[in-house]
Length: 236
Image (cartoon, rainbow, N blue to C red; front, side, top):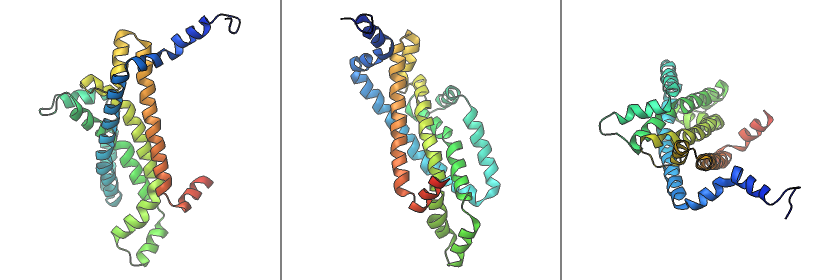
């Protein structure tokens, strides 16, 4: 049957060139499930510890200004280290070696810069008269922090979290070079075997994970952000 002035081979050629990775995913479905689960679990593990650690650091330096420049300097240095080099450093440390522990620790360090900076900026963005009003009502410093500053800083803090999640999801693919069995293996093996389908399949699946996690965080941000702050964001 003729199609667009040619034959059905037009569609076959289009499929082979642009959609061949779909058949690869179907053929390797068991591996896709395994690597996707491993990728998800690594990102979620890293984000859990990053949230606990780096939000605490961000809140701390917002209270003690002298620590802020030091924290930002350390975060910037860690962030510019090539990921494969940072992974390589961790595998040389006794008791860590190849595998998830080294990968998770390196990724947690990568999360420092965007998260700490955004927590600090968010807390500092709360206007001074609002804080003074809280003090005038007899609120303690902790009450001001948890009832005024953090709720008002959520949009900025969440911006840092969402950027970090997308970034970590992408960098996690490099962890395959130190033994992590995640979607990065498809990209790594695809490059080694010159298989475009394998590379595209890995890249598309990683992108889907990043978009999905960002979407979920966006919904969470909408739920916990006060209507007043949402209206202010929309106006800006």
